[in-house]
Length: 397
Image (cartoon, rainbow, N blue to C red; front, side, top):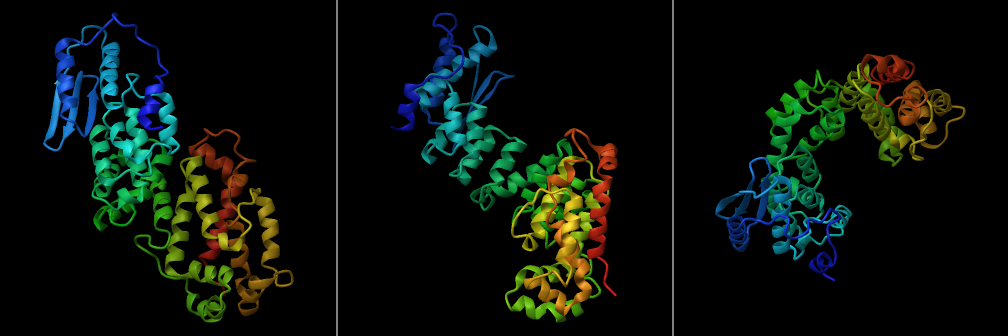
């Protein structure tokens, strides 16, 4: 069964307006049909000004509406006319179709139709579709310029590599000062830092602004953990550690040896310095949680079992055994045999590899707690974590 056949068998789950109560004026009906007969690439409805716009290869066409009754009811009739022409169903954009498209069950050839319905939900469904092309992204952006839509499209490699990628990234950068949710700030920064989207000057400007916006820093950490702007020098003992542990890393025992070398290198020290800056004064629980997740991922080679979801005191206790030469085993024992003074580094890395919500859970029951109150409540875990981060940035005698 085709999508149009499905549409013909269902109706929108919204109240039905009985015939005769209101109808489109003959002039509006005629002009809308002319617009549709010209096969527009996309349709946008300006509800406040009561204008229907159509996008074509030649530019925009518009149909100013002259409602014969209440605007919201009249616009419903307009959408029914458009839907009947495009989809063969007068019900507008059905709720069940929203489920299909968001679940990836709408075929790629149907995405063009979604952009011609004048429905915001249909545009959202289109930009969420894996089969969205650069051309369809251009049309969707014409219909509905929206930061959330830009983020959705920049999560699609086809759009990132197309002509629309830089345009969407530019919009998100310009919109960042108006974002109020830290989650969206972090995601926007992460997305625009993908290769080829913004130039070096814009990237550096974002980095400078992140001095006052820890959420921006988290975006940088997620996108560029090993290529942060303004890198610091490698740890003073990097060369000696490389001489001792290099053979282990080359021999395939990657987890502890290669991770230690990564940590004490210039990119690793830059990463740790930035994480320290974030956790010194985090503004919200989202920022703390995402930073914990970043640390867990960065140090994950030391914890192949994954997220333990443990409180900090348990993580501290079990990590001590990890750095004890008498109890260590395998690649960790080999590292300690070659560089016993790095035991404290291995312990710190093991602790950081276990960070997650389990560390925060005992101290924060209210998900809305933020700012200075949140930091006071989290001090019993943030202070020890900052101590471990400091340990990894301090050369061992």
